[in-house]
Amino acid sequence: MPTSMPEEWGKSGASLPFSIEVDVTDTPISASDERVGNEARAIEPQCEQVSVTGFSGAMRTPVESGGWTLEEGQLRFWLEFPEGSTRCEDGDTCNVWDLAPGVEFAGTDVDLPPGRLYFETDVVDHAAFERLNKEYLAARSSAWQAKEKVDAWEKKPAPVWNAAKNAWVVEETSPGFLEEQRQRAALVAARKAQEEADEKRPKRKDLSRDAGQWPRGSPTRWLGAKGTLWIKRNGPFARLPFGVGYHYTRLGTWSAEPVEPVETFWTMAD
Image (tube, rainbow, N blue to C red; front, side, top):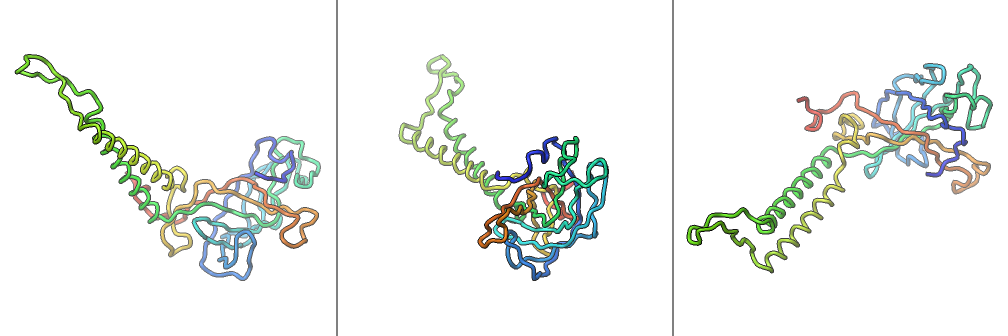
């Protein structure tokens, strides 16, 4: 994935975890964004500051509202971090994006750059999730039935006692050459249909712990278990038209859970 992060950024393997509680509204906002899209709706932090676990412990940094869109199963939204979080262990400001002093110290090579941060992840409507799982189960059942038909004559049956021959014999169970080929072809087709149905359905492990409404009052939805966090990086020609001089760089990952989860078959208590 293309990136313009300094080589020192994240070299130690350190992370900068933080959490934010937000209100997802259906209120249109006038601001637009090239990456998120037009007709964005408001997403507002419940607190004006967020606690970031930095290089010398927890610290507070301002966070401001942004906008979100949901199109074709992809959720995108932004939040503003006007100051970022760039404090080093020794208390001095260090910004590895500009290669400032201090990046050589262990644990100080990850910062949250100031600006607009972009959050992106997949979204699956619960109704579609249930439908795709039912289609997979139906395809799997058909594949099992097709396999049982082939196994009935392909596997060597157990010997049975033949009184007329006064011996144990293995009875012929083959349905005939043409029927064998038809049943084998049906098994191949059924297995392919099962694989295709499995590829289409979202996997439970790839989704959020709980389902919820985004926004409130909307159909029940699942978010992806691990979304991506991005920032816009400007270059020397950032002000030229057609986006020349900037690109988006991935900072890390994020996840979200609903404050008011909706109980589903997948989340019911035992």
